[in-house]
Image (cartoon, rainbow, N blue to C red; front, side, top):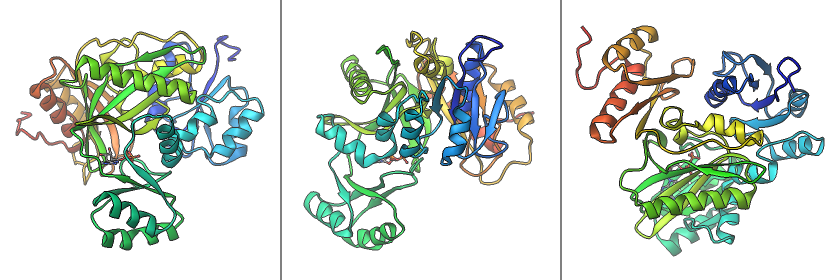
Length: 393
Ligand code: ADP
């Protein structure tokens, strides 16, 4: 407990933008997030009141960070499971707990558990030698999707293999480097969806509207909330599936279930047990943002309302190949001159090609016009270029 305020102290491992926005929500609840940041100038480190420097793979750093913390939670899934078990055994309240987190840390463990419980997943197989991939491709047909079981993000660690020859060229090299692998059938999907829910230790669950996520080169660029044209029945099915998964796996906090929509129905792609890019729209489009909800859930407070306030398009601001000459401050000035309604969330990060620097939420009627505005705004903020030729003068 914080003796100054009488309020609990939440410690978040990881100092990225998710911790930064969780801190923003913590302020309203009377708190200041305690953040374990791996390096200086991290997104949350710039703003949180109490920043401790240390690495998430260093057990001693985790131990000393957890002292005096009421709940330990995460802005990423990279803390080794053995460390989490050690902390939990020593009495630290870890939420989500290590047993649940494992399913967000290891895609093979997740696939095995989900398919054994009848949750719909793509066909898959474990890979310990190249023959495992060749057999899988031979039996089910090429292409197949090769994945690093752990350590991947934003499409890094996902390889589309078109033929046995391609598998032969890549798989031995990855195995030799110690990359744990699995192989999956390449799903013919209509689009990708995300079902975001939260669950508290008390057992309360809450589901936000299901969204469509649009990716480019493996990176999520745009989120449409709610997913256009998704029937009430499919929406309900996706929400039920995510709530059931949260309960079955014992998740505490926010759970994002990434889904593929196919002709035959929904398939689970992967799980994240923390606030997620597909939930950034909730900061403006919902009464309770995913960040506040994550805090409420890990503190076992009653959960907040998750209904839609207004249809929302979220566009990620991704770093330009070269940082523009125009300063970020001037770009923001021009953005607000054109779109006073834009809800801008910047992460305070240095500009680098493809890096997630922030996002823009645009609320309104979910049509091509709104999507275009969000896209133009996000591109302008990172590139200082209006893709539609708009003249700023
Ligand atoms: P990451 O952990 O890097 O986000 P994912 O497992 O989510 O990796 O895969 C990244 C992207 O690759 C997905 O968003 C999807 O577009 C594509 N993908 C992943 N698995 C499959 C699959 N089995 N079939 C078709 N596309 C896939």
